[in-house]
Each structure stands twice: as structure tokens, then as C-alpha cells.
Amino acid sequence: MTVLVTGGAGYIGSHTTLLLLEAGYDVIVFDNFSNASPESIKRVEALTGRKVTLIEGDIRSREDLEKVFLNHAIDAVIHFAGLKAVGESVEQPLRYYENNVCGTVQLCEVMAEYGCRQIVFSSSATVYGDPHTTPIKEDFPLSATNPYGRSKLFIEEILRDLYVSDSAWKVVLLRYFNPVGAHESGRIGEDPSGIPNNLLPFIAQTAVGKREKLSVFGNDYDTHDGTGVRDYIHVMDLSEGHLKALEKLPQIEGVLTVNLGTGQGYSVLDMVKAFEKASGQKVPYEFAPRRSGDIAKCYADPTFAKEVLGWEAKRGIDEMCEDTWRWQSSNPNGYQL
Ligand code: NAD
Ligand code: UDP
Image (cartoon, rainbow, N blue to C red):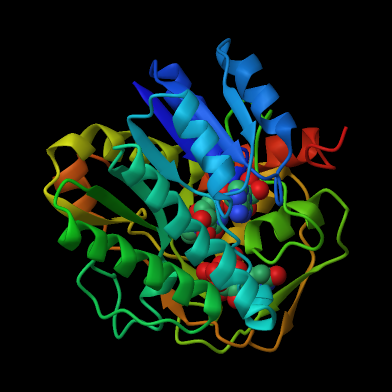
């Protein structure tokens, strides 16, 4: 079976590609390298001893996509390609809508043209906006607080409309909580460009000495220690969820929407402590004002994922921090050699 992985050279895409290869799938990675390096795929090939068909292309280009479908019989698509920085999306909304939404429309058009109607899409817990309560279930009300989140909501709706128009489409919308960690080898991991926006990469870069100290955004939230609570999920657990979704695709009628989270919430200070323990390094921090748009608590009810996909997260907070540290300390400059 051949799977097209858009954005496959990126953080979650590279880990999922590794598992797909290990499970025996043939994998085509399609990426424009706007936020990734081909080095990630070289390392995936070295780790698995298998070849990836790596294609440089853009999901907004019909021509690029048609070339792929013309030359390969693709059974299903896992669609990671997209821009993901919330703050940047507020400053450059059109770029986000163009890349994420228009790109997905192009991809679906070409898929339909070539008779491939099975897709797993990377959605996000951000589509729940500020949830009225936690844990979050899949049927909670949806809202967006920024253009990035809105692009995810639009794409979810577009994929639902596609199924209504043609019941041959089979769609899984995976709503990720907070992906962290790295492959246990320390050879692949998250390689953010510039100053990291996300908590764990920032902590890791502080522990390795690249950043002076962490700013903890807000210590007056209604949480156990006043700092924001999130559902951190190990990227290998998340990637395993994609394989389960792929196995499920042929049996799906319509659109399946699934939370991928652990069900466990940790605060910023919990993460700092766990990282210090895993790395043996101090992570200096100071309290700073709340970050605009942040919510107090966000964690999943993962029951449905277990019921419908037979999937649940297995790795805990210590493993998340240990694996992040192994990656960060052996690749302080990411994939830059
Ligand atoms: P990433 O930036 O590492 O990976 C995305 C990949 O897509 C990159 O390799 C990038 O080069 C590629 N890409 C972007 N635009 C493209 C285009 N027009 N054509 C071809 N390739 C393109 O990000 P990630 O963390 O691996 O996220 C993967 C997906 O999961 C994204 O859609 C993201 O929105 C979603 N997601 C991520 C998180 C998270 O916290 N990491 C949480 C929820 C959802
Ligand atoms: N956070 C922080 N300092 C940072 C980055 C993040 O205190 O430098 C906090 C943030 O306020 C939130 C949590 O860490 O409570 C997770 O933030 P992240 O950006 O990783 O994920 P998201 O906000 O998208 O859930």
C-alpha cells in the first residue's frame, strides 16, 4: 500500500513516516521544505533501512501534485502540510488561508481527479477555542481565536462537505493536543526555526544553554499552580494514532473526528520540573504576563480514540522529556550540520 505524506519532512510527518516504513507501507513524502529539511528524511531512511520517495513540491501547485499522482498509484493521503505558527497567522492571515486552505483544496481536487478519496487530516485542539469545561470531547462546540485555528476549522468543514457531495470520500480528522518529544534514537525531532513559540522546545533550548531563561506566561490562571495546563502527547504516540487511523480508513462511512491526547493535563511548572529531572540541567524561568489568546486549561477526553481506533497514548511525561533532551542535546542546532 502506498501512502502520500504531505509535509512529511516536518516534525510529526517525519516520525509518522518512520512508523509507516517500519509497518511495511511504501511512502511518498511531498514537502516544499518551507519549515523542514530533507535531512530528516535521510535520517528516517537510515533508521529504518528503507527508502522514501522524497518529492519537493507545494500543495498549492496543481502541477506539482498532478506529477505525483500521475507517476504513483496512491492509496491514501496523510495530510500534514501547513503553516502552524499562531502569532504569525494573526499578522499574515492571507498567507495562512492561502497555504493551508487553498493548498488543501488543490490537494483534494487532484486526489478526486485520480480516484484517491482517503485522507487523514492534521487538525488541532485549537478548534475547541476556549472550552467551557475539561476534559474536551469531540462533540464540544467549535470556535477559532486566530487565523491558524480558523484555517483548521475551514478545512474540517471542507472535508465534511466533500463527503456530502460524494460518499466515496473517507476522512479522518485527527485533533492533536500538544505534541512533544522525539524518536527514542535522538536522531529525529522537532527543529523550530528561530525562537520557539512552543513550551517544550523553549525549555529544551534553555536547558542546553541556547536561551537564557524561560518566560512563564501567566501564574494567575485557575489551575493547580496558576500556570497554564495542557495535554502534552509524545510524538511517537501521536504517530501511532495515524497508523491506526490509516488502518481504519477503508471501514469508515463518512468523516471520523478523533481527539489524540493523553487525557492528562500538566502545568508549565510541572513541565519545567520534569525536564530538569530528565536532563539534569537547571531551567531558569521568570513569571511574565499572560500571552494574549492563551487559555487556562486544555486537555482531551481520549475515550473515543480508544473505542474507535483502539489507540491510547502509552508514553508519560518522563519519557517525553527524556526523548526531547536526547534529541536537543545531541542536535543543539537541529538538522543544521
Ligand atoms: P511542521 O512545520 O514541522 O511540518 C509541516 C510541514 O509542511 C513542513 O515540513 C513544511 O515544510 C510543510 N509545508 C508547509 N506548507 C507546505 C506547502 N504549501 N506545500 C508543501 N509542504 C508544505 O509542523 P508539525 O508540527 O509537524 O505539524 C504538522 C501538522 O500538524 C500541521 O498541519 C499542523 O498545523 C498540525 N498540528 C501541529 C501541532 C503542533 O503543535 N506541532 C498541533 C496541532 C496540529
Ligand atoms: N508557555 C510559556 N512560555 C513559553 C511558551 C509557552 O509559559 O515560552 C505556556 C503557554 O502559555 C501555555 C503552555 O506553555 O500555557 C503551552 O504553550 P504552547 O505554545 O506550547 O502550546 P499551546 O498554547 O498552543 O497549547
